[in-house]
Image (cartoon, rainbow, N blue to C red):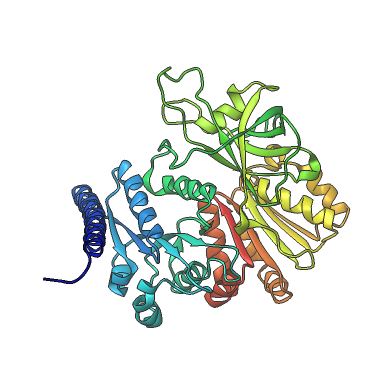
Length: 462
């Protein structure tokens, strides 16, 4: 018989009971996650019949990236897109060369290190330098800006993919400490892959109340869709943002939508103004859906919302498109409504006295589609713009686009880059791809990878 007092035995029993409960709890959590993963895999396998799967790869240290990868897969499956979810620990070069589309969710740990499960991939696959010319990819990079090497692994992975010939589906999305706005932007970009434009937001934005104060048609008589200058002011107080930032608009359905239609997800637009203007200005093209109805966001801003009426709006920082230092030359390339993001940068550069700027802009016709022509000409006359290259595709028999203007000015482009210039691109995704391909032909793949890794090649494409 033990000589331990009864009280000690009771404590031991209680401790054993606590440990048992904890073990059972952990086991139940593990089983639940395993069941959820198994169910998701079964759904993906069912969807894989008749279509090639999108590979969703997570590089996770704490599990957050893994959770987001499964949410990403679920969003794609809403659009009947086959998906396969894989840890980066299991990712091989053959996976990348035999797959057409990959979405990466990659975290950074410590002082800019790759997550532990990525060690094998970094040490073997990345050093093997596979040819990824047939791969398109998207990248969600998780980090914490309180660390000096913010999103370092995601940026390194992005540069390596482009260096190996892979083509981005859209620009890298960086998430600072779980920022919900950046995660909504990732979900917004997924619509390009899934084709689903009305998927509910993972988290609903906390909107502020703004007022629509101006709506002006920029291209009357154009062969293209209507493009509108839209201006909004805060209902109360003031607001701050930086050139390159984005607004999330809480759109509402038009009068032709059924009354029981759920509230649409947010819509994103590049800001075309600076805080000194006292208002947010946008360039919005009215989109038309296959059934003839207007697009949810563009229809609300350009057709349905009353001038003087309220607009739900949230400003989202877009650090990936923030300005370089004023002393650095800047090449701004865009087409159509992409002028919005470039206009904000030019306004900021003019205020800072930074005059080494080169604008490359394209649209359909100079007579109808030269958005904000008087401003561009004033900046040129005043020395803010050192150079302007215009590409109006319908003004001659042969179609001319912004990438053609870049090719014509290849020697000058190399000179600007040798002088430390940054390149900023804003506009449609197809334009962005064409511009990227032309820049690579002119500068070389390694130079483009270096510009990307050093933050000197930035894009806001949609």
